[in-house]
Amino acid sequence: MKTNFNLNLLTVSIVLFATSCMAPRPMASKFKTEQKRGRDTTEGIFVVKKDGEKISGTKITTSHKMELLQTANPVQESVAINGETVKFADYELVQTSKAYRALYYPEQSEKNCDGVYVNRLRFGKINLYHYEEQAPVKFNYQQKRFYHEYVFQKADGKLQVVTYASFAEAIGDDKVALSKFKELFAEGRIQKSEIEKTLNGLLAVTELYNGTNNNDYLQASR
Image 1 (cartoon, rainbow, N blue to C red):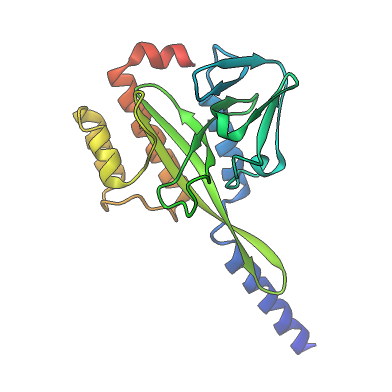
Image 2 (tube, rainbow, N blue to C red):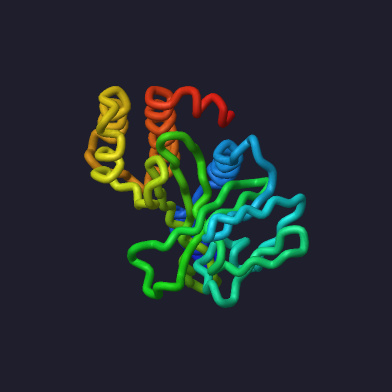
């Protein structure tokens, strides 16, 4: 009996350790809510191709790998909108009923053709995006560990990874937003392990910056 108790305790400990780096379920719901706020509320469902062509529709489906937000090979993956198929390699933006997503190529990507969807959380003068990287963690079963990553875009510039230095530089023309950023991230870095604190902090600073610099645009987006 004591042996079984010890084994059960060990199992519980392993589960807690394996899930400690995962987004708690309440936070998963929070991310979905914020993704909806990042959509273009003046538009429905659409795909924007790399040549600038915009295809609007009422129904969109994506390949299985894209639904899981994993890295994808543009030769194999595609979306279909109102029955028209668009290859992953031919477009860079897509808006579903749940999120506005941009195609992003991480600088550390092992293959030039690999890309991931990033979900927009806020838009305005600063666009804030989020995505999750997944890696299997194996014990006597398979579990998933999630790494939360943030990307931003200033105006129509390129997508960049959110680091303390890069984000501070981007909002540096707004002393109020920069001061708030330094206050919320006083340790001088973006603490990825503190999921809720990091998310709320970046959202607050982004809203402050957009409200100060481009209030009309922000209000129109709601």
